[in-house]
Image 1 (cartoon, rainbow, N blue to C red):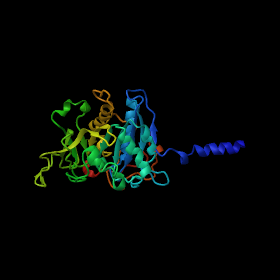
Image 2 (image 1 turned 45 degrees about the vertical axis):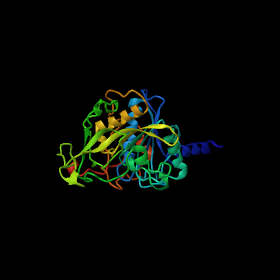
Image 3 (image 1 turned 60 degrees about the horizontal axis):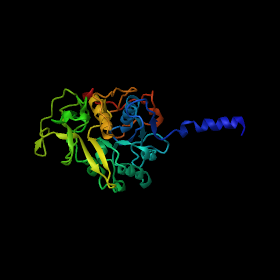
Image 4 (image 1 turned 180 degrees about the vertical axis):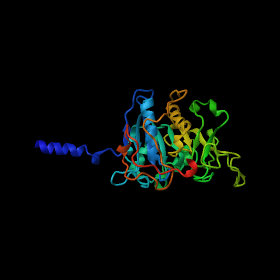
Amino acid sequence: MKLTHLIAATALCTSPLFADPHITYAPKEGPGKGKHVVFISGDEEYRSEESLPMLAKILSQKHGFKCTVLFSLAADGTIDPNNQKSISSPEQLDSADAIVILTRFRQWPEADLKHFVDAVNRGIPIIGLRTATHALSGDAQKPFGDFGKTVLGENWVSHWGKHMSEATKGIIEPGSEKEPIMNGVTDVFGLTDVYEAHPPADVKILLRGQSLAGLKPNSPPADYEKNGQGINNPMMPIAWTRTFTNKAGKTNKILCTTMGDATDLESEGLRRLIVNGVYQGLGMTVPAKADVAYVDPYEPSFYAGGGFRKGMKPEDLALGKAMPGKPHPKPEGAR
């Protein structure tokens, strides 16, 4: 081959056209050395494609875990959360030691779904955020019956608080403050509303959600009746742990929270709960106060259907990079 042809071929193979359809963050030294955490994004509203890379950077650079983020992609390789049939690089799940998932009504093809089912059946810990309670739909539900209800402990029920106008304050369940997973978890607040949730008796409730009459941390508690009860009496569970015995007879440690929108994760306390959940799920000692400071600048979009950053690719979320473009703005009442 002529030198000019070799140079041209090399340039082509290293061009963005050949970039990975996922992103992996090589770990720094830390307690998580040798462990691989796979994050699965893919929802139309809550901007998991923004938040999960941020969490993966924290776990890789501050705690030593190898972290990989999978996305829903369009045919041109850009991130398209509306493509419910897409999960990029599902084979990354074959080496996962833990899964963090925030998807909504995904309908992955059978061959792609198998990687996820096999990972669950290995008995690895699973952390489900927000719409993970309704992570799958259609034929993708068949291996589980109902992934949210069966595995995590709840499915989609309703917006208990008022969507886009009532925020959530996390109230620690009495007694759970002694749990290692709650180390350093304080002042949990998020701009999303409280989901209605009635998890089974086998869960350990960690947080309940106080519906606020506004979108600021100092907004007063909401005070009205819904379905014959006070909106905050009792408050709905918004975070819990449980164990699940899967079809292969293995046990999965579960952390589920109905919070987890990209703006919710501006809450240091909520980020710490998720990081702690990875440690506890893997049987590791939970730090007294895990470092959850951002690795790169983080300016998340306010949740909205179709509010994702158009044209963004996985490589745009690499270490040392801030997300391209401007975030979908928060409403005036949340600023």
